[in-house]
Image (cartoon, rainbow, N blue to C red; front, side):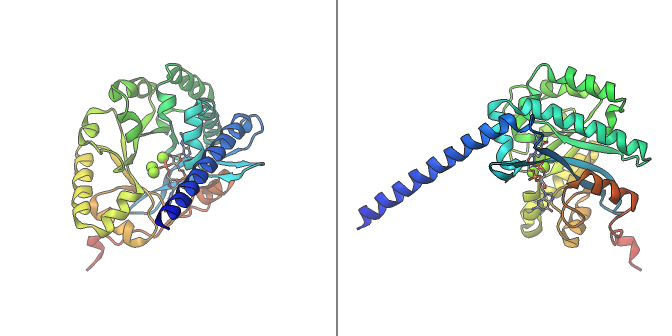
Length: 289
Ligand code: C2E
Ligand code: MG
Ligand code: MG
Ligand code: MG
């Protein structure tokens, strides 16, 4: 009986595997025409000053609704787009969108400090990317320091020379954020050896810090080091006041997460800015008698 169960299980996993591959192929095929068919939307998630609760910037996050496959998470389609290489074109589309949205905010007098853009390692290793990006930023007339390029720790760690990989985009004048910190090796040397301006603490690490005192010590140490190196630090996935408070005590100066808002369409984000919508200021130690 055990043997038969084993066979059933094996057949089951084979089917799951085939199903996964079929889905991946379907996603890959649909992605090829998604740009032409204008199926992407760019949403914005506010990034707030952790203490006073005001919006200082936003992270641009891709949304894709395929007519055949429905809504698909970027966590699913970005890796597929990276494998096929189409992420290079998608990435340029994202940059164009962000630049024109920044211009629209300027016109409305909603001077946002920065917009953060996720840049795939596949884009970074493309030798044409820095010049393409610079050309787009220049012709939009946007100050490059108002853009933050988010690069992932694990992505650049796989490259032989991460500092060399970042040097050309640093030269453009954009700020660089190290994204997903805490999910890979979290090499402390990266903080001092890479030309980065911002450290983004991954949501999973924020959650761990809340429940595990050893993780809290590590977070505190990393944040302290990052502060000494003059980096800004963003805590991701802040969902309640307790998490906000804890990250504040760790020394984190910026936050994003559902406590304030998920990523929303540009019009809604712009409305938030004009309403001057914000979180109540955090209860700091010295606000107690
Ligand atoms: P990421 O860059 O680490 O982005 C943060 C993710 O956390 C986003 O997921 C965001 O919606 C989610 N998030 C934010 N606050 C909360 C919260 O309080 N709770 C929870 N549970 N989640 C929260 P999203 O939008 O699904 O994006 C997933 C990943 O896909 C991103 O992770 C990024 O790596 C990638 N991605 C998204 N847009 C782009 C893009 O334009 N280009 C590239 N290369 N990658 C992108
Ligand atoms: Mg990001
Ligand atoms: Mg992140
Ligand atoms: Mg992440």
